[in-house]
Amino acid sequence: MAKWLEYGPTGGLAGWRRGFAIAAVAAVFLAVSGAFGMGQLSLLERLAYWGGTLAAGTVWGGLASRFVFPRSDAAGGVWLCTLLYALVIAGPITLLVFVVNRHLLHAPTPLRALISLFVSVALVTLVMTAVNVLAARGRAPAQDPQAPAPPRFLERLPPKLRGAEIWAVESEDHYLRLHTSQGQDLILMRLADAVAELEGIEGAQVHRSWWVAREAIAEARRGDGRATLTLKDGSEVPVSRTYARLLRERGWI
Image (cartoon, rainbow, N blue to C red; front, side):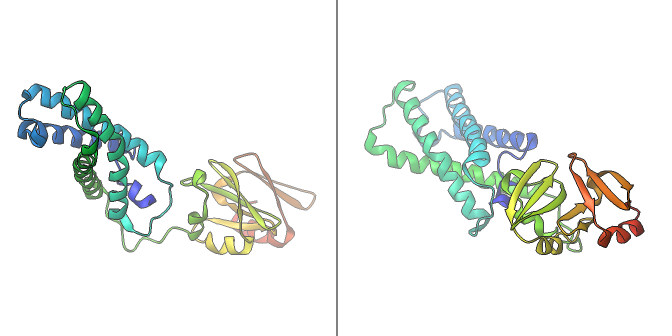
């Protein structure tokens, strides 16, 4: 689902602008057409009704895309996620429309009609979400088929560290402590397997318990026949004699 979230109505300031722009266009279309039997209202009233409702839906949609769904891939693909996302939005918006119709427009909707109201809201939401997805995908830069694939290890990062720079990986018993630009966390994995999956990031194993990224080194010190690396987060990493020669050849120490 992480891939789908790239096309959601959030995605930064540009995503919010796109979401509200689509909502505005939809509000004008629905108001002018007098959709859903609202032709008895004036054009101004219809614009206020649809503008407020669709703006509320856009805000709730942004919150849903950011907090409701976990940031993990979904087997069903982009369009299944789009459908589920539209249904999640439709629930609260249906209640909003129900309240507005009853108390502001004095057009009470029987409780038994809530299902048909939900279907109508869900259809509008699904269309707007699909347009949002297509608009975002159309603006997404084309990927170079010759570009190297990102390191496999990045897929193992916990959700709170997604997108962080990996500075170092430290072995602690059966776990690995990840040192990143967004903090630390533990994962269950062997260091040897991690080093293999980190291929593609400029770095090296410097100790039997440490792998370090080149860009993470803030300082390198040598003394008493041993070297120590200081990382950007202040961690001090010992360099064993086994790996010291390789690091000297690379100019790290």
